[in-house]
Length: 250
Image 1 (cartoon, rainbow, N blue to C red):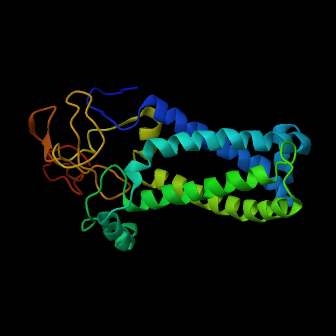
Image 2: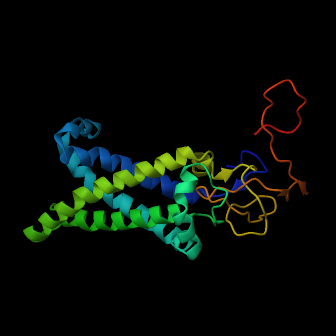
Image 3: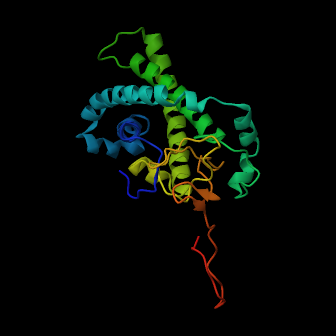
């Protein structure tokens, strides 16, 4: 969906559907799995019609999530290969957290933090799938030692994955425009900076690549707009007094 002809395409419809399939599956898995981790979460079983149905549906939803995540992995693993630039980004990540991202190295579609998140989730997903199959006794009859090992691996890995997803959601809310990109597939014209440096957000008119900023792969404000064929006017803050003011608001 292009809400504005000047918007830049960041994700296709199939990529967004893939992402939300994983996201919704994860929520359902958390709601159906946590009750068997601690009694305090037992009321969550009512979302599935009781504990019996929660236990039955949980592994099938897990299979759906594993398959959807595999598709995501195959789509994006090459874009998430760590480079020397990513290591420099990670070394200075604390500056970005403090709000100082001016000295951060330029990134492509994903920055170093996103790439670490990608591989951490991939590892967790692999462990969750393997251990989940080991304890799925309705379909598999592994030795009791394997079942016990699977149970020991499954629970803490799930806790780590929940924590990682919480960080992922926080980062998406923290960086304005990220949720919109995954909902509509586009980012606004305030994101791009250059049509020559590497990046992956594309203009629907010129299909030009744009440079992305270090903060969660967000493009920085461009000095030149290829669609308007003119130099872009940078935003200016609203005046604190009744002094004359021109320019667009930030």
